[in-house]
Image (cartoon, rainbow, N blue to C red; front, top):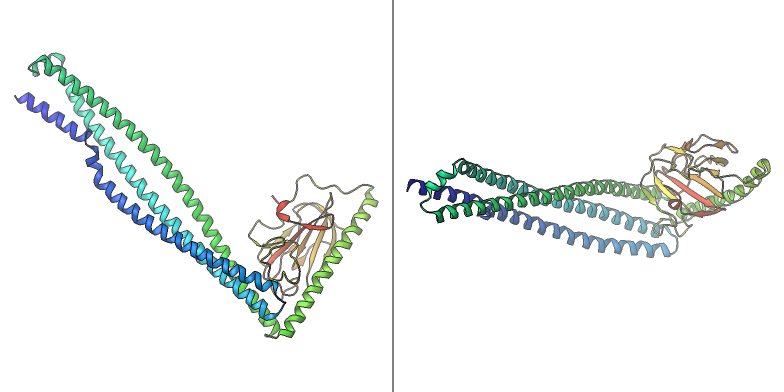
Length: 407
């Protein structure tokens, strides 16, 4: 009788550990589900907010486009800047909301990871306990087991129970392996979320810089014009003349320099095999090639990309070639043009300092000057939009999108 009670208790313990794992996990699983559901609600709320902000951003973009089609005037330009500033502020809020949403996703995955780890620990503990009990039973001799069981049928039943327990252990081991696989997937997902979060934070800083640039641009225009429509139109006319003259000089000089180089060498200039490199450290593009959002598009098209660069950043030759012009215009628009092979040329605008001379040969990566663009500084020109490098690539004299050529 004593042995029967012992045997019953042994199998009862094994059964509680192995055949009812759901009871062990139900409480923690319910808690996890509640946490995940709450987080999912918050994530959806953030998504809804982002959607509304995107709709408002589109309204601002349409307002900017409409003003750009209208007659050039100070009031229109200020309206454009106001809308751009409002859109930039909304961009910041949108980026911050994206960050908050991603933080919630990270929190959700962490909850799921914690739950999986707890389940694995518990299941391993159950398997360990069961194996210890089985090991204790296995220490008995075959004769002892036969003597402890009243009949042969009881012995067969004992063996059958032992076989069932082994099957259940095997099943639990498979479940542990599956949970480990799920855990690794969630950890990979968490790493991707953290990467996305870092990218969003970098975008947020860019958007903050854009807003600061727009505010600076508005302040500069108001300072220069003293809110006078007449003065604004005068400055606009001078800016247009300045750009038109630079364009004419660039086209004329490129043709002249290529012809002169061909006569000297007896053959056409060859382009270096390495392709182009970024003229400054790769950074945020603040205005794209023929950018529809360019603030002075109604005055002239934007034949370049504007790359954000702090005032006085080092400017490098994007490829080897000959300097066609290195124009220091004082407080006007200063720029450098380099002639390359295969009909290609590059232009570096708003430079605050120039290190090279006309007809000088430069190699790729060589420092040719310092960036500028800060309103009212050397080389910036009129109505500049803040510190940056204006960078052009031309093919047979015609501006092309630099991003098609840059690595």
